[in-house]
Length: 166
Image (cartoon, rainbow, N blue to C red; front, side, top):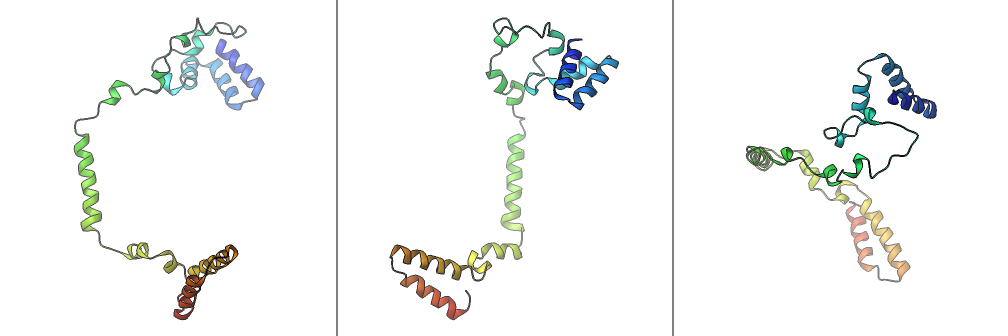
């Protein structure tokens, strides 16, 4: 009954369609409390806490921390890994080693080079014609604004214009 009152309050406050659907389903179903409580508890507390719908006595009074179950909860329990998950299977190192060896064998020995490998070997200026010339012109303007020498950059620009690869 407390959960239904809570849902009525949520429905009127937030106009939630989901809450009103839960409310309609909950009044007609005997499994309401079980399913509602399952979906409303957090992931980390599913295995350790009971359903909060059964334990709420009065919503109008504030809950005292010193008398609640929250005082006994240690925050480290939320973040620590359970013991049964800490133990790795005995075959895990072998499967990891075999997987890494198979990948290294494929990429290092068996795989043939293709067009993508050749493209990965190109520099950025070889992939985008004209980019180096634009970068050199920008660098020349920048160096001139600082009052520095631009002879090396101008030489490279002349070389690019002569070869026509810029």
